Image (cartoon, rainbow, N blue to C red):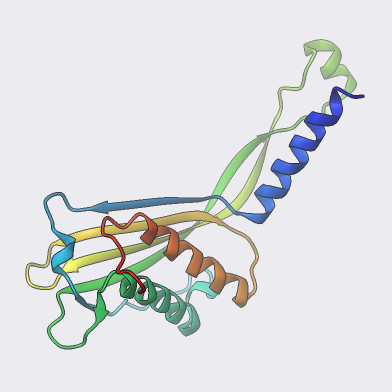
Amino acid sequence: MKRILPFFLLAMVLWLAQGCAPATQIYSEPEPGVNLYKYSTFKWLDNPTIARGNSGPEWLNKATEDDIRGAVEQQLRRYGINLCEDNPDLMLHYHVVIKNEVFYIRDWWCDEESWRKYGHCNRVKPVQYREGTLIIDMIDAKTGDQVWRGVATGALENMTPEEAEVRIYRAVRMIFEKFPQTTIPGA
């Protein structure tokens, strides 16, 4: 029993940590040779309206658009890049992709016959989930060239609008933590 207790406690801690912090993969890529410090203003490109599909209604509303834009604007201010409707240095665009995925986990339960025959369980169990990806692109307003892309991908569970807002702000913050420029002190 004493040998099992540490493994049980470790498993419990890992399970609790997983439940509190959904896995998010972050990607940030500046265009090679581009000096991002030369940009100080931006304007949003209009996102085309898309029909409801696999994206789900929670991602196709004004509140979510406002959350994404507000989170990005908040992060950009930290770098001294501000919203400007007239003659901006950068054009910003974002899009959200939501798709159904399958994750396979080991099924540790098995019947007595399988255990006797193989000595362990070899079954895997498919678990379906929805994966959401937020992509933010920065485009040089003068040349039309993409100068930076940030991406956050994570599993989506059934969320209230408040939980979705928190996840959006967290994902945008994590994207900009990998932004290749330093923040302005006090911003």
